[in-house]
Structure formats: structure tokens, C-alpha cells
Image (tube, rainbow, N blue to C red; front, side):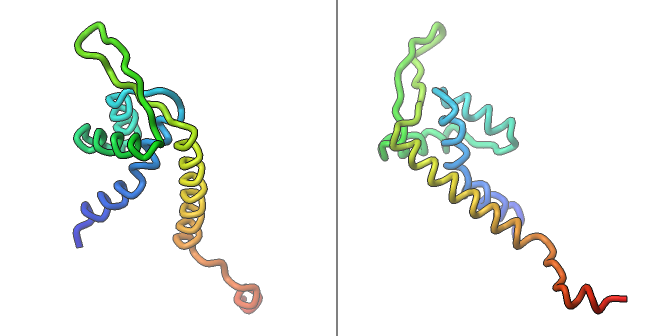
Length: 120
């Protein structure tokens, strides 16, 4: 079995939630998202990020504004819409439920009181 493929699939599963988590904190430029993700050891390429941002914008979860740049073309800064914030809250609840379930399944099961009492 290819562990790298499994790890990659696990990361892809939380990618949208992580990106929305960054944007929820305030207006952000895409390269800032890449930097924040990299700092968290979740590497993402701009070629992956831009289509995802476009899909989220088209779904009404994000909006953007153009900001003039001193060095080069104007920059597109993304911010979450009210609809995006509601969507994020649902994702956050789902993430917490999933994290709790995974935590419960990956911890050793507690012994029953009968097992504990029968031990010397």
C-alpha cells in the first residue's frame, strides 16, 4: 500500500476547511494562504488553490476585491461572505464531530469494571 497516496488523500479531505479557516480570519491574498498552509506543514500549490478559490467564490462563499499593487498588476484579496461564514460554521461542527470520533477510535478501549475487578 502506498502511504504517501493515503497521506495525500487525507490532506485533500481537509484542504477546503483549512483554506476557509484562514480566510475567515480576515481578508487574504492567495500567496498568503499558501504561506500559512506551508507554515502549518500543509503544502499547497497555487495551481491547486486558485481553482478552489474560484469554486468557493462561484458558490457564494467568498468574495474579493482588487487592490492596486506598487509592484505589478492589481491583487485580488478574498474575504468570506455571510453565506460562507454559515457554511464554515457547519464545516467546523462536522470537523469537531469527526475529530472526536477519530480520537475515540484511536484510543485504547477502557477496560470494563468487571475486568478491572477480576485482576489480581
